[in-house]
Image 1 (cartoon, rainbow, N blue to C red):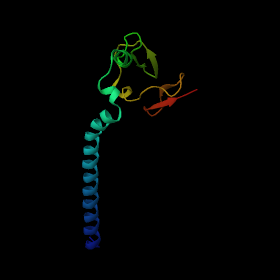
Image 2: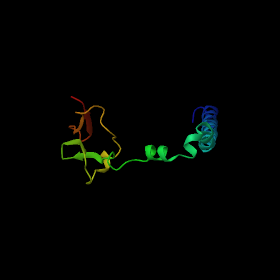
Image 3: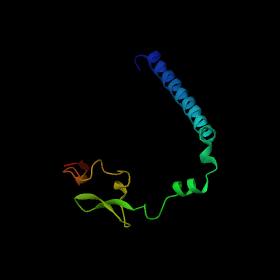
Image 4: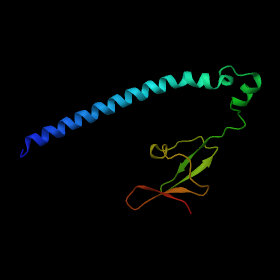
Length: 116
């Protein structure tokens, strides 16, 4: 190495950055763990729901619908009431931005989000 002091300074800087990131993650995890107790204090009505609130908060079977990306060899469409196989690459896409959006396979083999 041409500049050994520069390399050691970079290594120290990396270790310090890692230590700061680790400490920030620890404080964030501690803050998220205590966030649930604060929510009970901030909104006491949700801590002990009444019969009306329990009916409102419970998901109804009539309101739920299974939706998924249905993929062929060249396109994937968002389809309601679909309970079949979803490919692993389509599981993380989420809902489309607009109603007519779909995914199509590009020339390189990757997928491109298309919204006409």
